[in-house]
Amino acid sequence: IIDGKLGSVVILKGDRLDAWYEELPGQWNGIHFVPGSINNTINYAIMSNGTTAIRADSTMNNGLPTVEINNTIIKNMSSIGILGQGTEITATNTVISKCGQYLVACNIGGTYNFTHCTFANYWDYNRRSTPTILLNNYYNSIDGTTYIRDLEKANFKNCIIDGPLTTEISFDEYQEIGLFNYKFEHCIIKIDPTTETENLN
Image 1 (cartoon, rainbow, N blue to C red):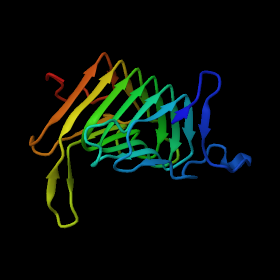
Image 2 (spheres, one colour):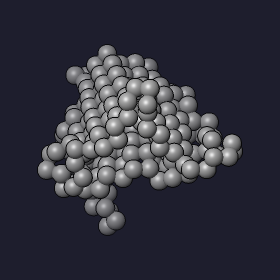
Image 3 (tube, rainbow, N blue to C red):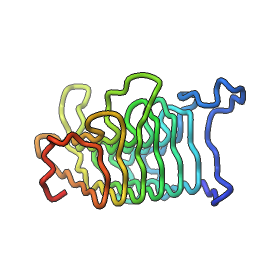
Image 4 (cartoon, rainbow, N blue to C red):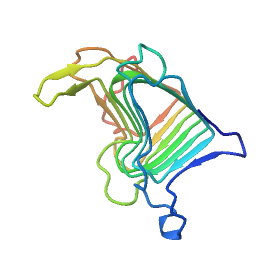
């Protein structure tokens, strides 16, 4: 439980104090919620200068939430802001910016709810080719076998998804097999205007 308050936030970053490290990404690994870890909360935190800020793997959680994030800033990560793998994550009033790959990767299925969040990936250390948001419902094993993991839901409400790429979201659905449920409600999304968006989501 990270329990900061308005005006008294919890800061998680590298421990080098010299000026050169002030905004240097990749200085620490981040927080990893392993399978079986449930009901974690992060309130009023600033997480910066790591590799992946939050990684949540939840194959053993029996449908219980892994982590709830509120009023938090995640920035300047060399890899990913939030990586969920078959997990349940809720984030409210949270800003994620400047990551070397994805800001949020809803990977290998799961349940995700984002409300009043800003995802703006203006990474400036090198050229970024991955979009701001990834939605995915499968994985490939070492032997080449593909396994479907349902994306139960990925809800975005009153959110902003932005960045310099033409399209800042990837819908990585495996051949329309398994659940791939997502919904954008009152959102601003950076997406190629030629992309077909006339669907129920």
